[in-house]
Amino acid sequence: AQSVAQPEDQVNVAEGNPLTVKCTYSVSGNPYLFWYVQYPNRGLQFLLKYITGDNLVKGSYGFEAEFNKSQTSFHLKKPSALVSDSALYFCAVRDMGSNYQLIWGAGTKLIIKP
Amino acid sequence: NAGVTQTPKFQVLKTGQSMTLQCAQDMNHNSMYWYRQDPGMGLRLIYYSASEGTTDKGEVPNGYNVSRLNKREFSLRLESAAPSQTSVYFCASSEALRPFGYTFGSGTRLTVV
Image 1 (cartoon, rainbow over the protein chains, first blue to last red):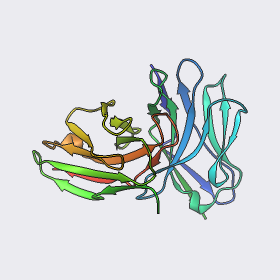
Image 2 (image 1 turned 135 degrees about the vertical axis):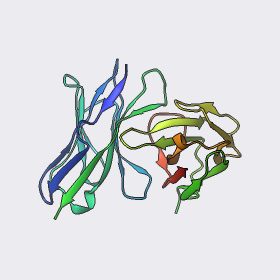
Image 3 (image 1 turned 90 degrees about the vertical axis):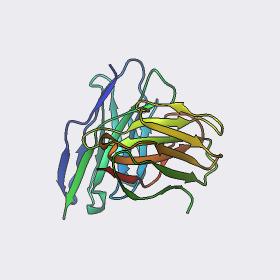
Image 4 (image 1 turned 90 degrees about the horizontal axis):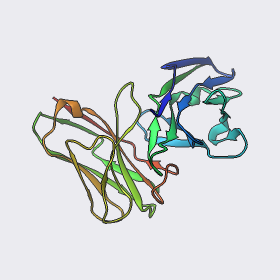
């Protein structure tokens, strides 16, 4: 069965330190992978996507993600965290049985402490 | 500002009551979606509309109906609300039916008591 896992409910990072939010997936074929961010009382906002090409994808707000096919992972990273990065982060993968539906992870709450 | 607007932002219903969640987008997008978001779970697709005049069921359509009123508006109706429908509901739109490029509204927090 297709699935997306975000193994950490919450990640705590000190401001200025690098951050990683983990995502692993299970789909057959070549995955389309996405990261979205949800700030409090706001809708989800697109951060970045991987469809094909370079395994390191750069996105909005200084975030990047590394696609690792052998480990079926798509971890979100940022070299230096900001307090304003505190939010809920969702990983998603295209449903291979559909050309439009996404399978979403449960989300990871990122807390950046000053 | 261009985007997706949802109303209301908050709503409390009694079991058995009905209500309609409204969604409007001003980006000239063809496709629109309704999702629900529950704690500890990812978003789940309720219904979607590939283009004006068409609607289709998503992953969790039971207990809901939708109307694509025109290109801009896509409403979600709960005919007889149940506590299991307590959730945060998000509307989204995209240029075409595809798995990326979504713009989301800010959500409706619905509680059914």
